Image: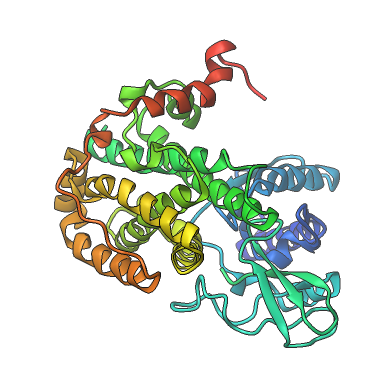
Length: 171
Length: 248
């Protein structure tokens, strides 16, 4: 008989392996961030032989969510975790605070200004604060539109290097 | 099944779907590219929220899916507010309609996200964040149009005046609203004065005049709609009605 602690060890190694697979699945709309960087993986567990992956939407209408679920299943299949299920959960609502530091760095390198500040009360919907240009680090920027190419981004322009850029808005 | 709770969830879903559909009609027709994209993003938020409500409603009614609610109900089964089915007309009307509703929507979501119904509070917490941006968008535009040119001032004022009678329906409770007030403390009568103060302040800042009207337009929550909803559903439901049970 296998003792309980070795089962747990075995399980946690397996879960760790699954996380490593998930860390290869990219957000289709921001293809430098993995779903782990983005902070939308809420839970991974094994129940009766099935791997259950709980993910949360960034925005209610995010059209990427279904694609992400398919991509996750595909990646797990490829890694021989063939019995998996992706669940959508809402509690707690996703926030840009959950984007990893690594994720924020990747966003900036990709030319998207990472979320600045916190989406706490009072800052949500607030667009007046200074957004730093991801290309030249200038603070001399202006908002062109609160809504950018995807729901999660706003459109800005740098008045020093004159480049337009996306800002991943606080949420 | 708890009929009142179910009706309430459908009310919320219908509001989101119908306004989302209306705003989506701007796709490709926005006055400038940035505002076209903004309106499309906002429409997407509304449709996404509608899906969450319909999915929740479907869990209460065996055999139903979210698509049944969107694609297979008739005009009289829809419970959306009359304001939200009104036509886009021009950018001013579109902004006025959203402005009145967004401010109400934010207030109701704020109450819902801390109400005792866990399923509804989860959806509301998610939607609240999105609607914060909607409020910002529509109230900024009310100010820009009101404080803009003579032409934009005249047209946003006309739109605010024409749509104002429909705002009475926000606070006229249906049976489902009464149930939510009694059971979960979601009391519309408490929101009315808050809404008036917020809206009046923005209207004043926009150098516009707050409309008054003695003739409230009611009935959407009870399924008594204008002919305009029929045209929306004709387009929205065309595929399902023409090719029943078709899937992507």
